[in-house]
Amino acid sequence: MATTILLVAVQVACLSGDGATFDPWRDRATYAITYTADVSGLIGGGAGVADGSGVRGSSGVRVWMPVPADREYQTVSGVRVDAPWAHRFTRDAVGNRFVYVEVKPNEDDRKMIVLHATVERRPMRSSSAGDRGGRTPADAKRYLRSSTRVPVTGLIATLAKRVAGSRSGRGDKIRSIYDYVVGTMRYDKTGTGWGAGDAVWACSSKYGNCTDFHSLLIGMARSQKIPARFVIGFPLSSEAASGRAKGYHCWAELQQSTSGWFPVDASEAKKSDRSDAYFGVVPSDRIEFTMGRDLVLNPPQAGEPLNFFIYPYAEVDGNAVTVPWTLVYERIKAVPDR
Image (cartoon, rainbow, N blue to C red; front, top):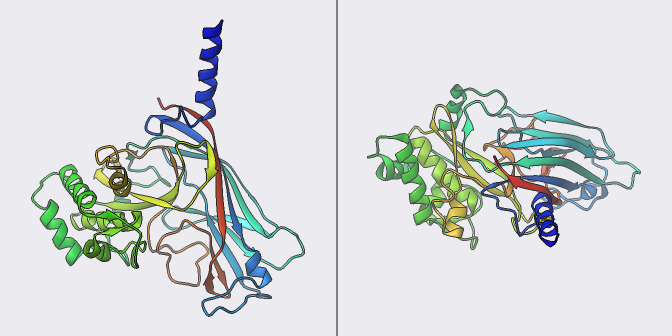
């Protein structure tokens, strides 16, 4: 009888997503998330545009919030938005999904835009060529081009040729570029310049955060004619079954062949000293939101294309403003991924 009770307890713990039993490298996890944008400052005078002026009474307040992505290894359901203003869901040219809100002065006590969703996430080991929005292999061409902070010529191309140029196979080139970035970059968020995802800066400075690691890696891969794309989301604790996200995390996917995309996480590999573990596998302790750089939203923002999009973005009369945010999660289920 005691043995039976113990077995039942273990099964319940596994299904509940208990931090002691959850293995993000093996398990599929289901998360309930609540993502909140506090826009009270935009309509109450508490926020300001670049010159520090207040925005009370402004008639042109627009807010965009990213929505978790639906992919082969990430299924999103139960998406709903609580807000006292009309809103709509839109997509950009890459397939990223947003909530768009035009904020109006009102007498409602609620001054928040709250996104709710349930996300089932599996460890990613690969994905097919058409995994997002009916994409085909031809769409990989967009991931060979330069972006504002990720050139594919000059210093980046010279470095990539030295590191990977002697390899003949695409898979070997990907591994050599990955090993170079992990081996030479330092994960460090001191000083200035880090965090912008500037591949040339990262190449010269040899340190930074995940955006810097993967901008360098993506630029080098593209210069070797390997399609590579930037993916961003929120990391979640594998130890705690509930909590609050502290900030974003990004990684990269490379087209190892025309059949699909291959994930790598060079910055986590460096931080954890587990280079092999993060080559070709992204664990389930994260939620993906958007893909790409130099993003034009829908409807288009007045400002410049976004370097990347993970936090709520808002404009007041065409000027970008900061929006306080919180993301809380609960891991409501964790089972082995079969």
